[in-house]
Image (cartoon, rainbow, N blue to C red; front, side, top):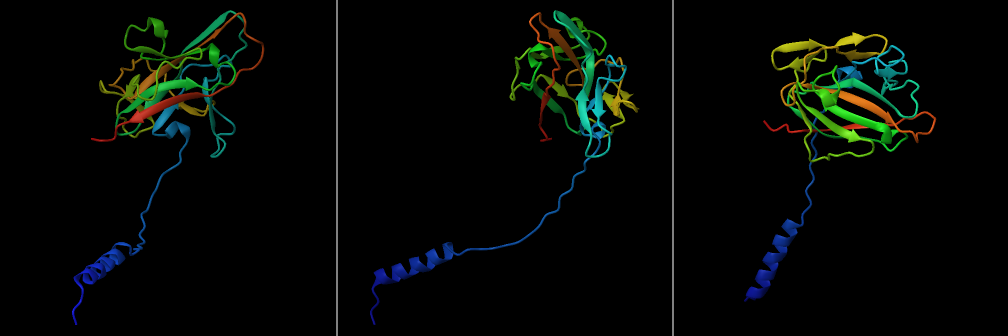
Length: 234
Protein backbone atom coordinates (compact mmCIF):
# COMPACT_ATOMS: atom_id res chain seq x y z
CA UNK A 1 0.00 0.00 0.00
CA UNK A 2 1.36 3.38 -0.93
CA UNK A 3 1.16 5.93 1.90
CA UNK A 4 1.00 9.58 1.00
CA UNK A 5 4.06 11.36 2.40
CA UNK A 6 1.86 14.29 3.38
CA UNK A 7 -0.19 12.03 5.62
CA UNK A 8 3.00 10.66 7.18
CA UNK A 9 4.20 14.21 7.92
CA UNK A 10 0.85 15.13 9.49
CA UNK A 11 0.99 12.00 11.66
CA UNK A 12 4.47 12.84 12.90
CA UNK A 13 3.40 16.40 13.75
CA UNK A 14 0.43 15.10 15.72
CA UNK A 15 2.75 12.90 17.78
CA UNK A 16 5.10 15.81 18.44
CA UNK A 17 2.25 18.12 19.44
CA UNK A 18 0.82 15.52 21.79
CA UNK A 19 4.23 15.32 23.46
CA UNK A 20 4.62 19.07 23.84
CA UNK A 21 1.11 19.50 25.23
CA UNK A 22 1.44 16.71 27.77
CA UNK A 23 0.95 17.97 31.35
CA UNK A 24 3.57 17.10 33.94
CA UNK A 25 3.08 17.17 37.68
CA UNK A 26 5.67 17.03 40.44
CA UNK A 27 5.63 17.60 44.19
CA UNK A 28 8.51 18.60 46.41
CA UNK A 29 9.03 20.56 49.59
CA UNK A 30 11.46 22.95 51.22
CA UNK A 31 11.72 23.96 54.84
CA UNK A 32 11.88 27.48 56.22
CA UNK A 33 12.62 29.08 59.55
CA UNK A 34 12.68 32.52 61.13
CA UNK A 35 12.60 33.96 64.63
CA UNK A 36 10.46 36.69 66.19
CA UNK A 37 12.34 38.61 68.90
CA UNK A 38 12.02 41.70 71.07
CA UNK A 39 12.45 44.93 69.03
CA UNK A 40 15.72 45.65 70.85
CA UNK A 41 17.18 42.33 69.68
CA UNK A 42 16.23 42.58 66.00
CA UNK A 43 18.81 42.51 63.19
CA UNK A 44 17.95 46.14 62.41
CA UNK A 45 17.07 47.77 65.70
CA UNK A 46 16.39 51.14 67.30
CA UNK A 47 18.13 52.02 70.55
CA UNK A 48 17.29 54.74 73.06
CA UNK A 49 19.55 57.61 74.15
CA UNK A 50 17.98 60.97 75.15
CA UNK A 51 15.42 61.24 77.93
CA UNK A 52 11.99 62.79 77.44
CA UNK A 53 10.56 65.40 79.80
CA UNK A 54 9.12 62.68 82.04
CA UNK A 55 12.62 61.39 82.79
CA UNK A 56 12.11 58.19 80.79
CA UNK A 57 13.94 57.58 77.54
CA UNK A 58 12.23 59.01 74.46
CA UNK A 59 12.33 55.66 72.69
CA UNK A 60 10.35 53.13 74.69
CA UNK A 61 8.05 50.17 74.49
CA UNK A 62 4.51 51.10 75.42
CA UNK A 63 2.18 48.44 76.78
CA UNK A 64 3.24 45.64 79.10
CA UNK A 65 6.34 44.54 77.10
CA UNK A 66 4.90 41.05 76.63
CA UNK A 67 5.15 39.37 73.25
CA UNK A 68 2.30 40.56 71.05
CA UNK A 69 1.87 43.79 73.05
CA UNK A 70 5.14 45.61 72.35
CA UNK A 71 4.63 48.90 70.55
CA UNK A 72 7.90 50.76 69.97
CA UNK A 73 7.23 54.50 70.19
CA UNK A 74 8.87 57.92 70.56
CA UNK A 75 7.51 60.17 73.32
CA UNK A 76 8.52 63.64 72.13
CA UNK A 77 6.32 65.75 74.46
CA UNK A 78 6.22 67.79 76.77
CA UNK A 79 3.75 70.53 76.63
CA UNK A 80 5.16 72.78 73.94
CA UNK A 81 3.62 76.00 72.69
CA UNK A 82 3.55 78.28 69.64
CA UNK A 83 6.81 79.83 68.35
CA UNK A 84 8.82 77.13 70.08
CA UNK A 85 11.60 74.79 69.00
CA UNK A 86 12.54 71.67 70.92
CA UNK A 87 15.46 69.59 69.68
CA UNK A 88 16.58 66.14 70.83
CA UNK A 89 20.06 65.64 69.39
CA UNK A 90 19.72 61.90 69.91
CA UNK A 91 16.06 60.93 70.01
CA UNK A 92 17.20 57.41 69.15
CA UNK A 93 19.87 55.43 67.32
CA UNK A 94 19.68 52.89 64.51
CA UNK A 95 21.91 49.79 64.65
CA UNK A 96 22.53 47.16 61.98
CA UNK A 97 23.23 43.60 63.17
CA UNK A 98 23.07 41.98 59.73
CA UNK A 99 26.37 40.49 58.53
CA UNK A 100 26.28 42.76 55.48
CA UNK A 101 25.98 46.52 55.15
CA UNK A 102 22.55 48.19 55.02
CA UNK A 103 21.75 51.50 53.36
CA UNK A 104 19.24 54.00 54.71
CA UNK A 105 17.71 55.40 51.53
CA UNK A 106 15.27 57.91 53.00
CA UNK A 107 12.96 58.79 55.89
CA UNK A 108 9.40 60.01 55.74
CA UNK A 109 6.68 60.83 58.26
CA UNK A 110 3.05 59.79 57.91
CA UNK A 111 0.51 62.47 57.10
CA UNK A 112 -0.92 62.23 60.59
CA UNK A 113 -1.04 65.39 62.66
CA UNK A 114 2.18 67.25 63.42
CA UNK A 115 4.37 65.98 60.57
CA UNK A 116 4.72 69.51 59.18
CA UNK A 117 6.40 70.61 62.42
CA UNK A 118 9.07 67.89 62.48
CA UNK A 119 12.66 68.01 61.25
CA UNK A 120 14.82 64.87 61.27
CA UNK A 121 18.56 64.39 60.77
CA UNK A 122 20.95 61.45 60.64
CA UNK A 123 24.26 62.48 62.16
CA UNK A 124 27.49 61.44 63.84
CA UNK A 125 27.74 63.15 67.22
CA UNK A 126 24.90 62.25 69.57
CA UNK A 127 25.28 65.20 71.96
CA UNK A 128 25.80 68.00 69.41
CA UNK A 129 23.14 69.65 67.25
CA UNK A 130 23.27 68.29 63.72
CA UNK A 131 23.89 71.74 62.22
CA UNK A 132 26.97 72.12 64.43
CA UNK A 133 28.17 68.53 64.02
CA UNK A 134 31.69 69.09 62.66
CA UNK A 135 33.04 65.69 63.70
CA UNK A 136 31.34 63.74 60.93
CA UNK A 137 28.30 63.66 58.68
CA UNK A 138 25.02 65.48 59.24
CA UNK A 139 22.12 64.93 56.82
CA UNK A 140 18.60 66.35 57.08
CA UNK A 141 16.23 63.61 55.89
CA UNK A 142 12.86 65.21 56.72
CA UNK A 143 11.98 68.89 56.76
CA UNK A 144 8.43 69.80 57.78
CA UNK A 145 6.60 67.69 55.23
CA UNK A 146 9.35 67.38 52.64
CA UNK A 147 11.11 64.03 52.15
CA UNK A 148 14.10 65.22 50.14
CA UNK A 149 15.29 61.69 49.30
CA UNK A 150 13.78 58.60 47.70
CA UNK A 151 14.16 54.83 47.41
CA UNK A 152 17.08 55.05 44.98
CA UNK A 153 19.11 57.37 47.21
CA UNK A 154 21.73 56.47 49.79
CA UNK A 155 21.82 58.91 52.69
CA UNK A 156 23.63 56.73 55.22
CA UNK A 157 25.34 53.32 55.04
CA UNK A 158 25.33 51.19 58.18
CA UNK A 159 28.33 48.87 58.06
CA UNK A 160 27.97 45.14 58.60
CA UNK A 161 27.06 44.15 62.16
CA UNK A 162 28.12 41.22 64.31
CA UNK A 163 24.74 39.63 65.15
CA UNK A 164 25.18 40.66 68.79
CA UNK A 165 22.32 42.82 70.09
CA UNK A 166 24.24 43.59 73.28
CA UNK A 167 26.73 45.77 71.39
CA UNK A 168 27.09 48.09 68.45
CA UNK A 169 30.33 48.12 66.54
CA UNK A 170 32.70 50.98 65.92
CA UNK A 171 35.05 49.65 63.25
CA UNK A 172 37.89 51.49 64.89
CA UNK A 173 37.96 48.48 67.21
CA UNK A 174 35.40 49.38 69.86
CA UNK A 175 32.45 47.20 70.80
CA UNK A 176 30.02 49.67 72.41
CA UNK A 177 27.65 48.17 74.94
CA UNK A 178 23.94 48.73 74.41
CA UNK A 179 22.63 48.08 77.88
CA UNK A 180 19.08 47.41 78.97
CA UNK A 181 16.79 50.11 80.39
CA UNK A 182 14.19 48.41 82.56
CA UNK A 183 11.84 51.41 82.64
CA UNK A 184 11.71 52.05 78.89
CA UNK A 185 12.05 48.32 78.07
CA UNK A 186 14.63 48.94 75.33
CA UNK A 187 18.38 48.81 74.82
CA UNK A 188 20.21 52.13 74.92
CA UNK A 189 23.59 53.82 74.59
CA UNK A 190 25.08 57.05 75.91
CA UNK A 191 28.31 56.52 73.98
CA UNK A 192 30.20 59.59 72.79
CA UNK A 193 32.01 57.64 70.05
CA UNK A 194 30.88 59.30 66.84
CA UNK A 195 29.13 57.31 64.13
CA UNK A 196 30.97 57.34 60.81
CA UNK A 197 28.93 56.92 57.63
CA UNK A 198 29.87 53.67 55.88
CA UNK A 199 32.30 52.61 58.63
CA UNK A 200 30.20 51.98 61.75
CA UNK A 201 27.06 49.88 62.12
CA UNK A 202 25.06 52.62 63.87
CA UNK A 203 23.85 56.19 63.39
CA UNK A 204 22.19 58.79 65.64
CA UNK A 205 18.84 60.41 64.83
CA UNK A 206 18.09 64.01 65.79
CA UNK A 207 14.48 65.20 65.91
CA UNK A 208 13.30 68.80 66.22
CA UNK A 209 9.77 70.07 66.74
CA UNK A 210 9.67 73.52 65.16
CA UNK A 211 6.23 74.77 66.18
CA UNK A 212 4.93 77.87 64.34
CA UNK A 213 2.80 80.69 65.67
CA UNK A 214 -0.15 79.27 63.71
CA UNK A 215 -0.07 75.88 65.48
CA UNK A 216 -3.38 74.58 66.80
CA UNK A 217 -3.65 73.30 70.36
CA UNK A 218 -4.00 69.55 70.70
CA UNK A 219 -2.14 66.24 70.67
CA UNK A 220 -0.09 65.25 67.64
CA UNK A 221 0.70 61.69 66.61
CA UNK A 222 2.06 59.89 63.58
CA UNK A 223 4.55 57.36 62.24
CA UNK A 224 8.17 57.81 61.20
CA UNK A 225 9.19 55.45 58.39
CA UNK A 226 12.88 54.60 57.97
CA UNK A 227 13.56 52.93 54.63
CA UNK A 228 16.44 50.48 54.21
CA UNK A 229 18.10 48.80 51.25
CA UNK A 230 20.67 46.01 51.38
CA UNK A 231 23.02 44.49 48.83
CA UNK A 232 23.59 40.90 49.92
CA UNK A 233 25.74 39.92 46.94
CA UNK A 234 29.28 39.29 48.20
